[in-house]
Image 1 (spheres, rainbow, N blue to C red):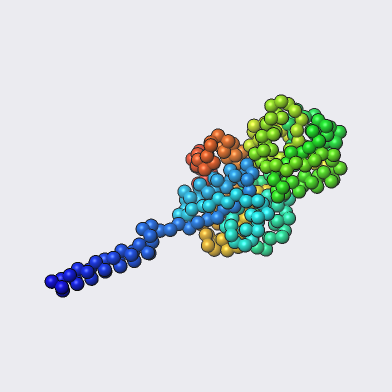
Image 2 (cartoon, one colour):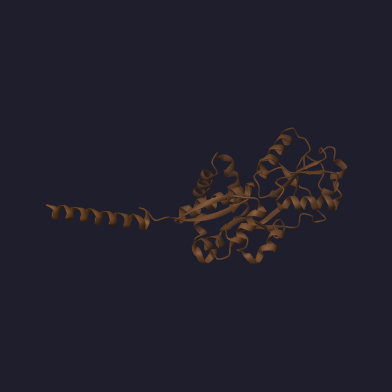
Length: 287
């Protein structure tokens, strides 16, 4: 009897050890790699980053953690390896200071979008065409330029424009959402307003707007939007890096992606819907 009980006890112990060993190997399922994707809370960056998250999680066995960060912190986090990549670097102008400081510690994969622009933007009913004309109508603009977050490169360029043109307008700090809300209110009442603006952005589809001419080039010339990765990302995730290298959006593509974000309450749902509507384009990035 004792021998039989000892046998049963030993069998239970062995079974338990086998179960624990199997559970310890994979926890019942293979743990996915987590990719850290950083972005700045701008309309184009938000749309671009949510679409890439949705697509990578569809195509690869990974979880993508979106990290909304100030531009300066984002670049530093790429350099230290705390962030894997971003798809929102504006070069060579807007993010010039960050890139020049950290270019040896990050990897630039080249443009995913060409023809990007930044500057001062007004509704088309405003009857001036150049930054040089702002001072003559400062009162009509309320003596202010409505800006976005202080760490954005466009804000540094706007400060430079104030100096270059001797503008008698104050640059107000805000954020993308607040800036566009103020623009919408003024637009609906046909009031004069000048904001820091960039394209691609959904506001150019929602309102009739124009960039003010910038003869002194305070805002630089045409820019590109580039994916930037941490050093070593290509070796750790070669297939994802290849996708990032192939990924490219036209003006129409980017515009429709940003517009999709305005149609849905959930950005990730919007991104997935856009992917389905543009499946042939999406598939071309993986060929």
